[in-house]
Length: 266
Image (cartoon, rainbow, N blue to C red; front, side, top):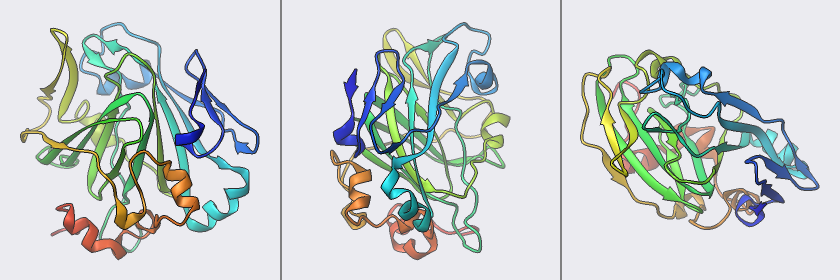
């Protein structure tokens, strides 16, 4: 049993068999399992054997006392556990998705993640959802406590390249639904994360027309949003961190410009 309470922001533990155990006063959603058969269309080697259950999603958790404040803010706090292992030589990953346009705005919804346990490769790509032409591909090699913002217009997938379960949390606008079809149609992201001769490498996916050289993103603080490495982003929200950017991205044009993100059609 691994205690994750400090970084989660409430009583939470990872059990020896890879499930989450929620403490008193914490909303305890039932886990949704994503199996290998659910993932066949986005795997590099769908015919290869591997674990049956790849990851579990716990949607809309948090403290019971925060349920109404989260709802009023239009936010949802989720936790995902990605199990270690590979299917063929490809590390276990999430399905991957893009985000819809925020109603009446010129941006898609962003998202923010924090690693609670283990290590991960967050993979992000801009473009490709319609034409297969990728404008930007980002790899973020992150570990416990690190925080990543998924900017508007980026699709993303999370990989567990480690030997232990990866636990990550995310804040997101509560009302949007992820868009999986573009990832499914092209059999995954523009690059696959595989093990080759004992090393983690990134193999191009031939279903895409372009493969820009991956850009490495380093972890860091986000002081303009009140988010800091190593500190629970749930607790930061309780203390007043500005997460309105998740619900009203049009109010944060300067933030997106600093990340190299324009508006739709720009």
